Length: 157
Image (cartoon, rainbow, N blue to C red; front, top):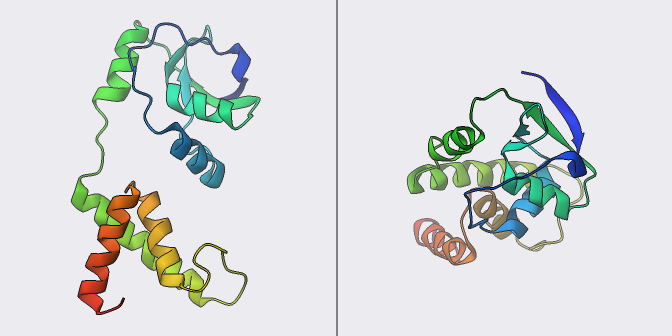
C-alpha cells in the first residue's frame, strides 16, 4: 500500500453519510500531539473514501497536505460503510487497561531526570492519570472517577 501526500484543497468530500463528527477539538489535539497515525483514503480521482474526521481535524490545524492511501473501489459508499461499520472500538475494560498502561509508561518517564510538563507539575501521578485517561478516550468526569478508584485502591488522596 503506497501513501502519498496530497494537498487538502485537492481532496473532494462528496456526499458523506456521517453527520455527527464527534469531538473534533479532541481529535485535532491528538493529531497535533501524536501526528496522524492513519492516512486517509481517497480514490484515483481524489474523492474521499474514508477519514473525513481526520481530514477536517488536519485542516483545522492548518495543514496544507495530508497523507493518503489511494484505494480502488467499485463503490465509494461501500468503502465509507466498510471503514466505519466494521472497525471495533475498545470496550470499557480495554480502555481502562490501556489507560493504566499509558499511566505506567508516563510515570516511568516522570521518574527519569529532565524537564517535566507544567500540567499538574507538583503531582506527577495526577498528571500521568490525566494524560493517560485522555489518551485512552475517557472524558473528564470519567477521569475523576478513575482517580477516585485509584485513591480507594492505593489509599492515596
